[in-house]
Length: 436
Image (spheres, helix red, strand yellow):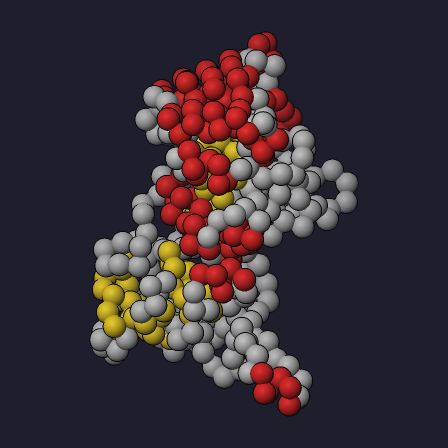
């Protein structure tokens, strides 16, 4: 199972027109959320690729059918989107979201966990992230305590309602799994997997017996064939060593994050931990935009991405909190995470984008995406000519999921009538004339 303010409804992408603003759900005319829409052919015309080529890309049946030089794929009967001035990229994926708590920072009083409220938040959060480009979202959902499995059921309902727009995956996150108190948590975790949670999560750091917590999670994951995605600060080298030793044999893989504590360890200890994680095949999901509410705040330093990559650890980047207690101004924007990895994390722009796209998809068990024939049509077009420029200034975006346009964001920058502005020919994000 695969692991966003939405725009106003726009019309068929045939002419490339119809961008809007506002707050309504986006539905291309004549296309519902059924799989039948995936068979509609679509031509992306005049897109720029990262290697500098300008190409036409034909999509159909949810995949890329052909890539050719601009003008070489005549298809008058196809829907057409003009991507002149856009860079076409594999779409990002969001490996670390919290849809059940998203968008609660501005509320007054206790946060409501009524199923309809959680479903609304999870749906709106996924659409916000989709508008930024993330066509797949992995949402960590707390279970247990007084709310039981209600929030998980609400997120699973959001997943069903989003089918055809975005792929939403639920991670069941219990609080305790050991001792007398943990017995109920373990039983509830089993029920969560039966309900439809396709990933098992949790935070060993918060359990009185972290090793016992890991044993319970890994045993259940092996039993049900589920991947594991755990919260940990990563500030305890002995605990990371045990995790690596225990996780190495899990077929469907183990991810941990945000691991900001690794940055606070002595260099030799952090290096040894990274080597052990790499040897065990444990992936790390960092959160460059800030922490999330699932962990106690011990410092806002991000994981040492360059050190981890140098050791061979596959590092993905997620957004974490989206305007909740963990980060009241979180944006849920993958390109912002990539921007921070490039501007502060020491990665080259292409490496930073890989962390939110290829590495994120891999961590989520999703198929690889390239802008080549035969690959899934999960794409993001951003106004700009190279990755560095779109990470710097990425307002105008067109998002394609399963071969169809599912979200658009259009921005226009204008200057006053000034000879200076005209003489400098300052860059603009959008155009006033019709176009994508």
